[in-house]
Image 1: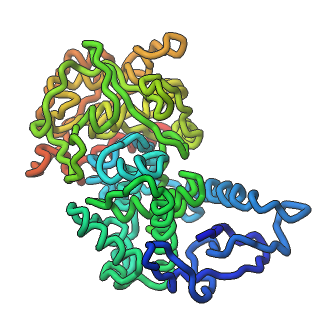
Image 2 (image 1 turned 90 degrees about the vertical axis):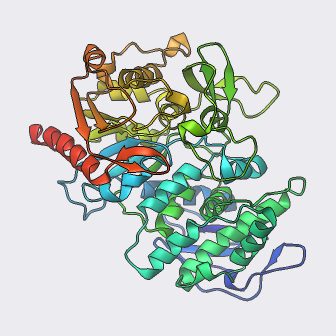
Length: 494
């Protein structure tokens, strides 16, 4: 199936492909039947055959060559997704940037909307566990699981259809491989009950990219894809990224389909279409390759991951640093230096508050901090820089105190143990000036050591006990604490 997907730039004469009438042949390849009218969402997208005839294309004196349509589409997607705020957003809403992974901070995202929707969520793209690992193994590209997870948490829930779309994109297939494959075909053919309450425009939009994802898998005849425990949202995301050859475009599309508030942004810390591999060096000299192997090794299992500290063996030594490793070629231990997403650097320069969220310190937070430019901008800002301490220990921080967390973040931002030519020498207080701590948490809060690091504002926040992960922040209390911190900053800048 050879298709092209793009914006309407002026008047287009097109031949429509009806994805509502696609049927899988015995070979598993999808064929086209019938025609489709314009049915897309938001900006007028069109699903059409490869040949497009342009009678008008704005901003150009002559029609563009065929390959430029995709470039123009990606540019427009990028521009529209990364706008700072909508015209209707309240100027009183504080703007935040949150460094986090795809799990721990999700629990407070909904409550955060009561404080502000002007939030830039910065997430790593190096996760190599679960169904994400299978997508990366067969199709390559960056890991999208954390981004998909945050997009779903931010998605609209105000209507029956919005909830149906959220259920569909949040659905996971069975762990049993044969059952998973059977259910996947039922979904991609549009016959699964999850499509109930999803209107035709949404259905055809989502199915188009699931079909594209399926055909990309079939084209890799030398690789057998395992659908076990697969995320439908990840498959949709991967299909969009592959189609556009752009992670930014895929995020924009997912954001529009799931109806994320226009003031909110989900930003990959590295904007790339390539596979990224995270590595770490332990203090005993050991090198570990892969985020999954660092934080919660599963030894190839597709079972849902339990990230609790007691469920995995301890590391032989503390982690000294994390870095990015080559994913190609013969020297897979070679360190590489990807560039930070310019949109992240731009947001860091302008937000009212920078937050380091709770979560896996070395595999969720630090991968976003070790990039060139991140430490430089944060250290130059005069704003609140808040660290949310974990409530429980994990494999990465089994014997850490609060000041150890601060040291690790400082070392990551300073790139203390990396290339000596890229090192910074900033004090911890240049990066963190406020520490929030969940009451009754497992991490010792060594106040004197924190004071020696220049951190004097330590606030304790009500917590709750989660039977799966232990002590976590009470979402409402945490957001109120953030509101107090941000409010004090904004009042002094009026």
